Length: 172
Image (cartoon, rainbow, N blue to C red; front, side):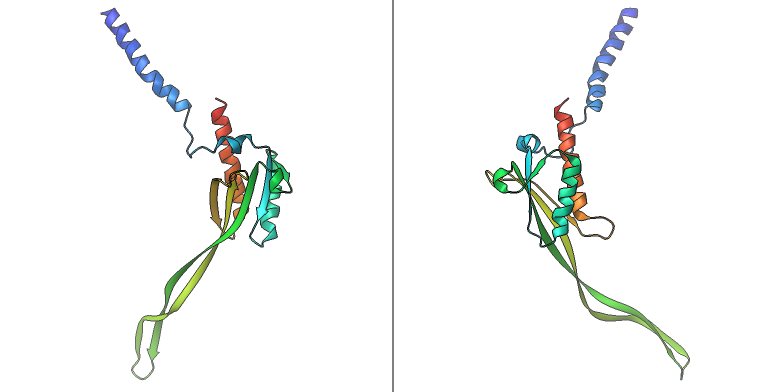
């Protein structure tokens, strides 16, 4: 009887062990970057937005990160960080709630009065990480311009987090 309990305990431990090990080593939540993104040493910032602040913010973020040396031409770069702007337009029908008082009858009338159509334009900062040797896009993302936070800062933070996450995962 003790032998069967021991065997049962051993079988239980062997069945649980893979689950415990798998829990400690969690897979990447994103598709991995090509190896060139991780091994690159130099990067060129190409700003096609006509917004100099975007390149300045990217430069500041890259300098503080320290992973890549920022170079002044595509020919010297292992990677190109290409910034562009994107736009999306949405239209919606405006309407107003109106309440009117008729002084002759003493009655109130209320309801919704249709208005005109309003178009709202959203601006996005878009970034692509490009291999200058092949022109392959190795990663791309975009963030809308919101008043809370810089879209460029968010994009650079996402890039940094993903690269560091993958480096950490590959060093295990």
